Amino acid sequence: MIEFSNINKAFQEKVVLKNVSGIFTQGICNLIIGASGTGKSVLLKSLVGLIKPDSGSIKYDGREFTNIDNHLKQDIRRDIGMLFQGGALFDSKTVEQNVMFPLDMLTKMSKEEKYDRVNYCLQRVGLENVNHLMPSQISGGMQKRVGIARAFAMNSKYLYCDEPNSGLDPQTSIRIDNLIKDITHEFNITTVVVTHDMNSVLEIGEHVIFMYKGEKVYDGTKADILDTDVTSLQDFLFANKLIREMKAHK
Amino acid sequence: MKSFGKYLILISTLFVRRERFGVYVKLVVDEAISVGYNSIFIVVIVSSFIGAVTAVQTGYNLVSDLIPVSVIGTIVRDMTILELAPTIISVVLAGKVGSNIAGHLGTMRITEQIDAFEVMGINSASYLILPKILACMIMFPMLIIIAGFLSIYGGFLAGTLTGALTEQEYISGIRSGFQEYNIWFALIKSLVFAFIISSISAFNGYFTKGGALEVGQSSTTAVTNSCIAVLLADFLLAKLLL
Image (cartoon, rainbow over all chains, first blue to last red; front, side, top):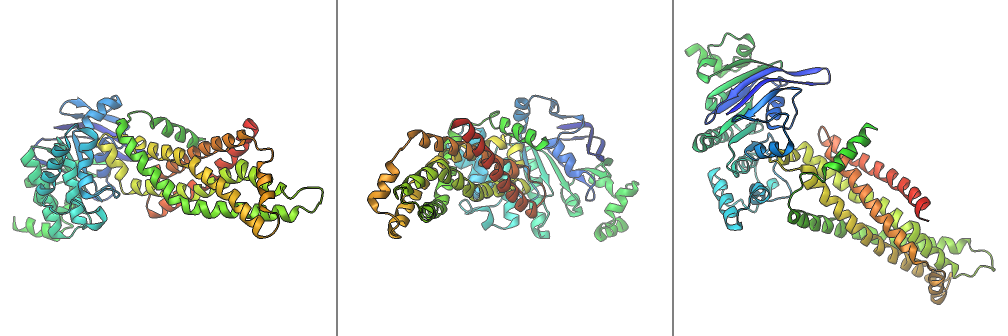
């Protein structure tokens, strides 16, 4: 479980996050949604420690993450896996080396154990016979899947995904979404997905937070979201024709 | 001043939260091969011509019969060891190696690869920058030694082939009044320049913000700043050590 309370962040004069609080529950897909520039990615980067919030508290299963010593922060970070928007695969390493990298750096596993783990992770995301290819030699969707394999190679307790479907075709997007959902349930991970893709919300959104102008204006489930009376969320949701039709048929 | 402070903080972070020693050995070897092997061609070309041009121009300026032509060898040797090999080659390497370092780190930054290291709990600065600095500090002195030999040999070829002086006169010139300390001075300079070029380029690349355009700007800034810093350090070292 990830708890965060009263997170504030401003870049010079521009306030990006205003008193944002919430809880992300273990074993489900938690979504942060909102239009571009509403603070979703800043919130995500604050949660993983890439951006230091101006104030507020973040706790991982009760362990304080803000304002602690770097060594303690490092321990928590080793439980975190993250899928970046562009995959962020190390372009000088092969697919296999990318997935093996956290195991090489952070574990004392034997070579055989590492290879077994890498092969298992790659198989689990549906990738075989790509071990020796470079990231530039595989498609965007495959890069995302390698990114997921790398993110959970360390048996991460927390999985963050930043816009996992950006730049992907609808079919591949659904495949990535389902993969994230399956992995979350199978390994009982606390998963947090930042997206503005309504298909993802409908596909995997078990718990949804909606951000608007740096504030959290909705916190609920996918089932309740269509009945929301929050105007900004309605504007966001019903910009999508499919959602309008769903609402009409409900 | 703000950038300089940021640079010093970056350098200090290279030595905290380091990874295992063995991790760095492989990285330093890989980087050293990349720096050395990829730079050897340009070093050979530049240094050979530097020596050749120095010999020809010194011969052109020697108009007095009172000065023996063997002085050409002496001048090529001293200019090569004291200045041309360490400084000019370092400036050339600032363009070659410096832009490569800044471009590589800048690209890693904008494609979130550096963020990926941080999320894993790995000190990205130490993992990515320290091996590059160490590799440059190992390879630059070697490249400077090669450049020194080739520059003096280039002077020999140019001097003898143009008929400015004989082989014996050139060899006599380069042996005359040789001071071993000058070699040490050149090596100290190459070490300092290696640190300056690699760290400044890494600094510019590591803090790149934006996209492809900014990566290009970082590379340009890295080369410009490295060259200025090398020339400044060259003057300071000459004042301090000679």
